[in-house]
Amino acid sequence: MPALSDRALRMPASPIRKLVPFAEAAKQRGTQVYHLNIGQPDIETPPAYFEAIRAAQPKVLAYSHSAGNVSLREAIAGYYDRLGHRMGLDEVVVTTGASEALNFVFASCLNPGDEVIIPEPFYANYNAFSIFSNVKVVPIPTRIEEDFALPPIEAFEALITPRTRAILICNPGNPTGIMYPPEALEKLREIVLKHDLFLIADEVYREFAYDGLRHHSVLGLAGAEQHVIVTDSVSKRFSACGARIGCVVSHNAEVMNAVLKLAQARLSPPTLGQIGSEAVYALPASFYEGVAREYAHRRDVLLERLQQMPGVRCPQVNGAFYAMVRLPVDDSERFCQWMLEEFSHEGATVMMAPGAGFYATPGSGKDEVRVAYVLNADDLHRAMDCLEAGLKAYSGSRIDR
Image (cartoon, rainbow, N blue to C red):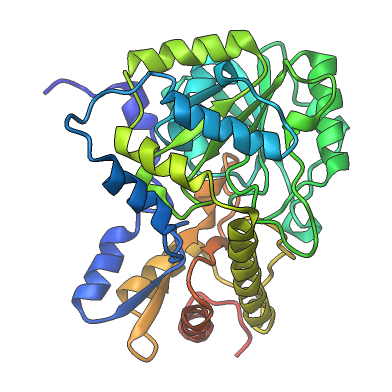
């Protein structure tokens, strides 16, 4: 039998989805599973998305332009213009989700063996994207005790080598739920200008900012226009994960030309997804405000419940809809699997993503989980009831009994 590629063998299983078989088995036993493992919102997709697709009624479901429909790129450019960032149509390429956007950026900007510095914990699929592109992730640790704040410039510079080509951030953060303040972004501007690096920013959760804070895009970093690349998506902002529509945005013409060539090689992004996405980009500011208020309420419920649990630590998250939580357990993956395989509370249990998969540093995150507060407040309370009861019952718990 022929051997698989080294790339396939090195590709990690998703910590977000690897426990799905255990969740499915629990459901077959009649146990209700509260899914806090994945960023799949339960907020309804705006009706405008489906109305636009129904109204289109194409006779042929044809390819689009490889860069995306002109009308969608105009809508995306208009969205950025409202944020204060004027983008031309050639500075926007539509992709099949933000995942393809990041793969395109890695392939356009980094050669095999090049290094990208990423604050960890980070979105688990960054590891997968780096393996796919034969790029080396260089993690720079952040600490839950410091609310996962961006490390100082000196910590970044200590990691820069001749192979370093980029810094990648997610802002607001997945999995941390932390939003970087403007002064932290200014530090990154200094670094990329000094060392002639790319600054890649995953800004998918831009609209979800709480406690009166406002998101600041790296597109606003003066003097760094040729260094900055943004990836974005309709998945979370519009609760349209299945649309698979994202984009790459940058003022760097060489980068965008390279991204376009990769987009041409895969032909085109989803046609129907583009039609629906164009419609939701036209939604008023009140839509974003309403969704952000709902997530802020869910965040408050989650933090209040977690802070009442003995031995549990969670930072004061202020963005996105995730929290990286430290649990009083010996091994979070074993605990998460046990919750699905052997435990239930009043006929229910909770599914979370084990923390180790969000790190590149071996041994990190073994007592952490990522929690996605994508369920309504009532379901969140029930999920927290399950977690609290599970921590008390788990044999590997470090709670004093």
